[in-house]
Image 1 (cartoon, rainbow, N blue to C red):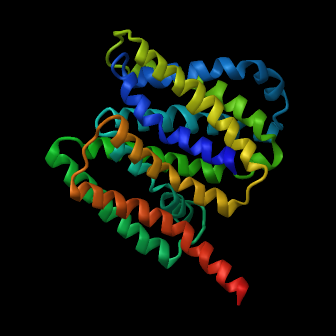
Image 2 (image 1 turned 90 degrees about the vertical axis):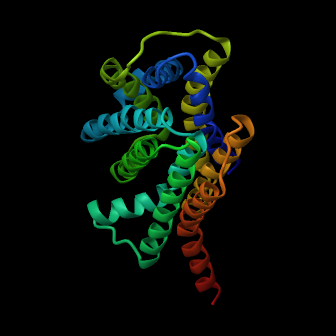
Length: 290
């Protein structure tokens, strides 16, 4: 379980280092550099891993590489450029609910009444985050929506990829989608980069290296290693820690100011997402005891 907690803590810091990297390069270029750095670490394993892909999974793996990296990361990091790191990471906290609703509308997985109630609470929380932050100029509705769209795209990968890992080794899968993701990101980068100017600084360069090595290559490997020995329920609970860690890091390291309304909205979003995982788990545990 410790591997999973470390991975989530690393991912929670991604937006903080993203903000630092923007002092040097355009947000879309940050994503491309991040993926290219991670690709260098994955290349030695890529060719044999790619050859082991079952033919019937080939198309799905290319699709997962496309969604997981260019689409999700570009939406999140371009969104981050418009809004605060704390508000952006709060949008990530909606993922458990987003996954439930994507399953309901697209994959015939009926959402429960609890999911609808908590979804409404999270929606109210998002409104408060935006309203409270826009008054101080720290939060942008457009930025939050882009990050939220990234979470929605990630939700689709949960359903598209859930059967892939059953047939294809998780470590091979990670190496393959990182390399494919870096390559697939290139045309998006050419189109989306607004400013190709590089304002070099060692601090920003270090942030980009951390995003590539830590948040992409290392975190995914730690996550996959932890998956082998952790129950699915525990995975969901650990995932809810990411926005908590992220907001704390944004406040302490970036000095972001939270108004009362913004803070209340964040509590509602993170609380609703956490409850969507914890309440069913507690209910199931109590039923077993009875």
